[in-house]
Amino acid sequence: MHTINTPTLLRQTAILDHTHPRIQALVAQRGWRELPERARIAALYGFVRDEIAFGYNLADDLPASRVLADGMGQCNTKGALFMALLRACGIPCRLHGFTIDKALQKGAITGIAYQLAPRSIVHSWVEVWFEGRWLELEGFILDGAYLRALQRRFAKHQGPFCGYGAATPDLQRPAVDWEGGNTYIQKEGINHDFGVFDDPDAFYARHGANLSGLKRWLFQAVVRRWMNRNVARIRAGRG
Picture 1: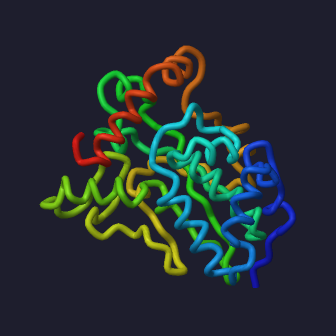
Picture 2 (picture 1 turned 120 degrees about the horizontal axis):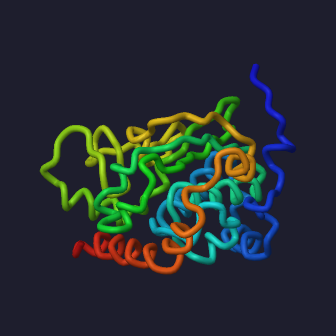
């Protein structure tokens, strides 16, 4: 029988600031704590996947409350929000860190933004303790509207797909709906496995975030705005 250190996997950190009033108000408003565990996880997963749009925040290591305020995120930031909500609702979770090849982002990121991106991009998914085992949840990264737009755009594509924020064996039937098991949307782009961490703070302390220095400033001031406009055009079927 597997055992876990539950207090460690429920604790608050600088990034997982789940006692923040914004997060606590959302949890109370939605009544998530009153749900059975399976329904609780499903509700949190659905919220982060579809009510937090796929997009690019100022940085990977933002507090979860800031991601919630932004109303958008990518793998690392949506993952931080998901973890904070899980812990706020009493569900132990941890982070699994990786890098992904930047080819996965081509199309969602274009031009100079794509050139500036490192070849290997820091990536993570969330692991949730449920019914005595760890589940790997990554399928929340792309919101449903954005994913459906991709599926329409590449309706004739068959076989593995890589680009526009997805790396999956089957774009038309990706494993993104949570039905008690694992979910993935970028797994096929992974090129390095860093292992598991109790929280994002420990992961970034060891491996850093994606950008620093001048590149980080340029990304925050200019490039991410281009990226988010491009993502919005794709979601609207115009990109």
